[in-house]
Image (cartoon, rainbow, N blue to C red):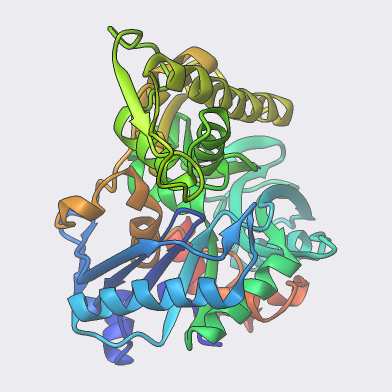
Amino acid sequence: MAGHKGELTLDQARGAGRLPTVALDLGQSKVACFIMKPDGVRHADSTIRVAGAGHVQSRGVRGGAIVNMDEAAQAIGQAVERAERAAGAPVSGVIVSTAIGQMASHRVQAEVSLGTTPVGDADLARAIGIALAQIKLPDRRPIHVLPIGWSVDGARGVHDPRAMRGSKLSLDLLVVSMAEGAFSALGHCLALAHLDLQGVVAAPVVSSLAALEDDEMDLGCVCLDMGGGSTSAAVWGGRSLLHVESVGFGGDHVTSDIARGLSTSRAGAERLKTLHGSAMASPNEDREMVEAPPRGEDAAAGAVVFPRAMLKTVIAPRVEETLEMLRDRLRRAGVGLEPGTGLVLTGGASQLNGVRELAVRVFDRPVRLGRPQRAPHLADAASGPAFCSAAGILLRAAYGPREAVSARKLMARQITAADAPRVHGGNMIVRLSGWLRENL
């Protein structure tokens, strides 16, 4: 499989004649594809230009897993084809953002002894190698390996330890992983769509890159990505990704609750949710009547008519339960809920009326709705919270963060200490040089 598009700079990509970077957001509600050509990276203002975008209703994905390979592959192919036509560029491989596979994060630590000389590149490479050797995740596939921070003799918060002196150098790495079975199914699904899988990224991680401000990442922020099949969170602080959490409830569960509770079809329930649904009470909703088609194909059956207030009684408990579950998991993990930590909502389900207000109540902190901030030329139909993940893949490819292990190695097998950057004869090889340059 080909390497990650983001592993080369724009100039290197031009020199190699690289094809456009292609982002594919695979969710339970939709499949979106964004294409960025090599000249789409705008370094002057740190933005990107998307050359083509396409999205279709998702099929074959349910309950955090791909349940029908053929249907999912067809939906992927349709989304990619639409983006290809808009961009006027062929697509051979994609980087996939998704929340399937019970994504979770794990921390590993490493410590190396220092000599009498200042900390150098070889010391950093040794620490990374020791940390990678500690990653033991049976039946799971690492998809992100990111440095959280360095410390010298216990002094934490060190961004670049090179040239510092001490006796001990420590490193914290964050490893985000997904179920190996889900990873294999994703690869097979892309193969059915005649596409190479060039990398997998966690939806909340790349959504953060599109929606969060630099100050939010530095001072502390939680990005909640509210998708159709799951709701996931990425916690940031000190410019580093600190934690990833996920629960298996999303906007599609709200739709199912409406269909069951109000005896309507799924299509009717989705329409009710979109046009009239709210997670918070609104004026006059007791007197306002709405209607939905009945289940089944009985032509004589009349429409289901009920007060709009009934929608809120179905929607609010599910949304509140989902937010509370995620809040409690973050608390147990000990991250993300310190005073002053902001909350940003992304994903299609975040657009439901009243969700932001309910999140304010559940998390007891300011909440805003996120959008792809550094992709200013997106069409209105592809510039909302639901498209942060696709835009974030392209932003990550253009600007980082760079990971400790290349996407090629993550795609190929479980990582080992041998995958750490190396120093030979006192000279950095290209991979170590690039990693240090972009991360320190």
